[in-house]
Image (cartoon, rainbow over all chains, first blue to last red):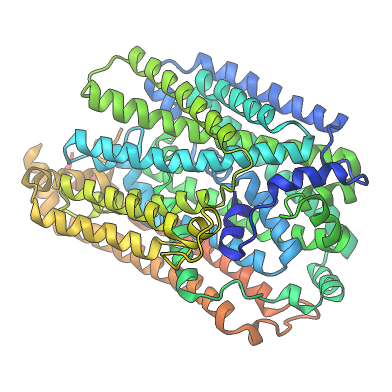
Length: 539
Length: 100
């Protein structure tokens, strides 16, 4: 989905994924777009292994704590890999490599933006989140405020983020799988939906975590192999590669190309990328799988290490694809450049390596969607059903049952929407996800931890004002108002609303909290402090 | 227990812990903003500088891009090292002093 975001930000061209599928069948010189024996073997191996793990995990998934939080049995290191698995989508793998291969240096600017949220997550949220919450980020916001309004607002804000992200992932998945294996779009969507449902439904968080870990190892290993095999042709010296890039495509390929033209838009995009991470429910939820705050901290350290490494080497893969495969071939298969990495794999390692990389991309898609679905199920069942409808009084058996029903409901909604949006431009969806996450969820979450005077109405106001402003401004922005709704001029000139919508959410929280002082909540803030900073009483 | 808790909450030691925790967080966050937006600023305004060569073929642009990622990683690790050595020790100390 990164590709989509990049395109939405960078150029007015619609994402080329859809048209690309037709182009793929025309490219006769490559096995990309065909099902090969090796891709089947790797693919079946991955599915068998993950289903076996799901079977094993199912036996250990009896209680709500096991279903949502893997019984808090995951170590910091394991959770770090799983977090990186949750975050590194197929599109950031295929999309950044493609962007660098076709546009050169500009792709690298984006790669940096995707990492900088992680240190911010560490400084502001990781430990308090682990100490205060149980299963969802709404637990933290609702800690000393009135349950009902907070749970409803936070669940709606969270679900809005998850559904837009899942939709972008599913539409992308359908297109990518069609590109890579030649499977029809609907079949690909159903397949991803069903397999992902099996993971989450039977194996809960334990299975989802291990699927993420396997996927992250495959992805990091696969890209490292691609890097080493490719760099061998440049005497393992990236300098030689840059020389070859400059020789073939000119110095322009190695210098900024007018991506960052509007400074305020660039600042706004940076804010959304950085702080949006701090409002993504499926990422925040992972912190409850570790035993304590120290392990939560270690999780972020490892996640940052793996993700940083990934974004350091992906641009090199993109440059190698440009030199070895050529821009013409890459854009011939897919205008958006998404097939740069698979084509490079085929060039340096033949069909077997292509099969491996294709299977890795598929595993990546499956794992990300599974993580989103589990987070959505927890928002629906834990926040809405257990805490609002049942007022916290539900048996373990009932909680798990409702969580599983919610899983199926969300999975079906995601599949249905993906079919409905077939061939549509969903470029704005990722921008929307990060904008709502950083404007709706993040301000309420941060203030609930740090600001004593935050009241229930203030927190609800922050979530509503942030989400609604971000949503409306994206609709009125050039990405949707001009590109999709085909209007002449955008009503809101910027592509990223975060710089307005996020401060507005903070402002709403501040004004409303001062107007509706919540003395009960202020009194509870003191005991919250002990739990936030010392971990006393943490679950 | 309640009195223990009140003593803890009103103690200078606990207040100092919270203050230092946020001083470290906000300082590092400021460095992160300077690092990232500094990079974006140079990309927007300093193109002539970025295309100058560092080695035979590598230019400053590539070094700065990778440097931003590595810098963000280092800023994360600094916090972990600080928290694991200084913060956790003080947390344990406060718990031992007030809650036993």
